[in-house]
Image (cartoon, rainbow, N blue to C red; front, side, top):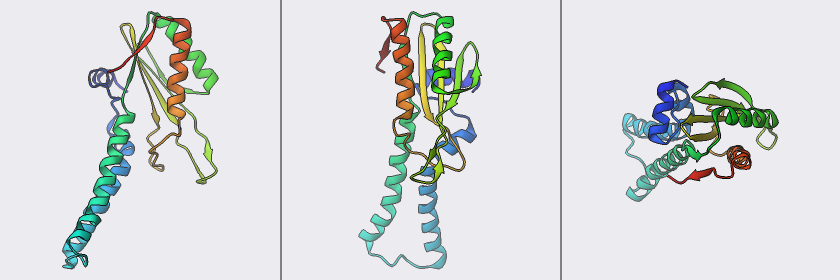
Length: 190
C-alpha cells in the first residue's frame, strides 16, 4: 500500500487495493460475467438462436448477471473502512496493535507512521479440503482517528465471499482493546 493509496482510501472510505489485488478480490463477479459473455458469444458464433423462449433467455442471462452484481456489492462493502476516534497517541496505539498482533498470530507486513498492515488466520478448511487465504488487517492512522479494515487476502487460487466472522472478530478485538485504554474513543457511523 502506497501513501497515495492511503490518502485515497481515507477520502473514499474504502480500502484501496492495487491492480492485482483488485482483480483477485473481484474475480468471482468477473468470472460470472465472463460466463455470461462466453455464453452469448458461443450462441452468436454457432448461429444457434438459443433453444429457449424469451422468458427462458431472460432467466438464463439474468441469473449470472444478478449473481455477478450481488457478489460485486458484497465484496465492495467488505472494503469499507471503519473509523474510530480516539485520544490515544500514535505510540500508545502502536503498543496496543503490536500486542494484539502477537496474541492473534498476525504476521506484520508493513508498519510505518501512516499505516499498519498484517496478515493472519491462515487455517485449513477440512470441510472444503482447501486452505483459507487468511485475512489482511489494515490500520490507517490520521490525526486522532484510526481507520480499520480486515478482509480476506486476495489470492489467485481461492474465491472467498465470506470469512465466517474472522474479519469482524479482528476489528472488534482491536476496537475493544482501544476502548479499554481510552474510554472516550468511539466509532464514527459514516
